[in-house]
Image (cartoon, rainbow over all chains, first blue to last red; front, top):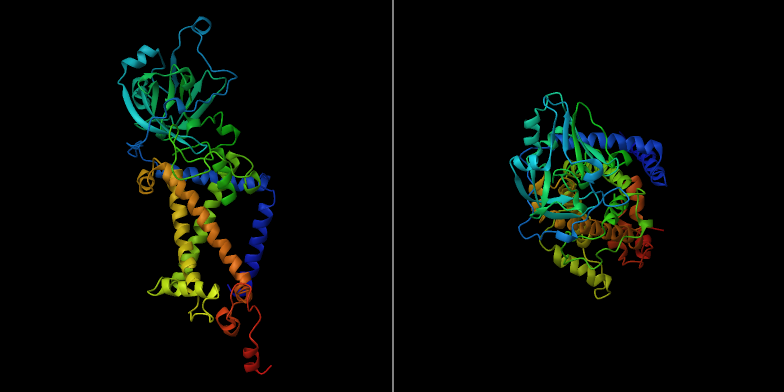
Length: 235
Length: 217
């Protein structure tokens, strides 16, 4: 390529960049390119993913405690009302050999995992807490997840909030169905009676107020990922 | 990249881990004016940021390959005496020293800037990876002092890149406007260089009469 060709090609591409920057940040054409980038980035992230990569909160880091933010999408804090809905139970179903319902006591009888880890929010903050719960991989073994299940949907009683994950991240040793936080019962603001918690996904992927875990052959979007946040949301 | 990054920053315009204070940023929880941001909203800005990052990386690799293959990196590496030469440039610009210091292709301050820019860009990419993948690339995040510090260095490196870039563009117009022509068409007339014109910012922008006389005008 000689200098003249290089310059004209450069000029054309520069013009394209300026046009793209002039308020077209929500145009359809740029959206297509961004969707492509998101798909490619998901590929990169899934290639980088390792079960053995662990999150360790810095030993000098303080527990967030009361400063741990608590988001939900309902008008008011979602509370499981036993008089209306009967006793709470976690339903594990989909591509499993033995669909089951677990009461909180059932979950507590399974091997307990306690971990002090980061919570990474899509907004850019992180917060340290101690989580107690059952490894999702242990639950998966109890119900016998079938091999053709590639995705997991975590559903809640916080309106229609749910988020689906790739099964690899769900089976990460630090992915918990958590019922305890900072050595207390999980509080109402933080997703009681049980929630998903894992440092390997951004906060919005960690469904609170958990009701159902469904193993699926394909992804099933999610509350925030359907509104334009990345579906993968891995850390 | 900067605009979408600032939009992302505005979703949590602070560095402190929740429940802690952050030592080294006086404007905690003060957002950047929206006019300086790009992407419309947090999710949109994230898509732009994670899309454009590949343009930045490819562009950077092409640049590094080019200056390596053409040997032009030799004009940029720091050499003994650079600090002294840079000090002489400052003395010249402050009218303490009457004549422009002798220089090679670039003056010492300029050379240091061009040497720092690619290094800062590499730091920018690495700190970006560190806060994008703080668990899968935990070793990288730890290298920068953990998530909070990696995010801080990502921000501060951006500030440094902007300061150096604007200083560079300012100096092009203020001392060496003739270089714009050589950026576009190639070639460089040594008799128009700042050294030949004894040029300080906004001083001696025109070619010296002496040089013109020598050319027989």
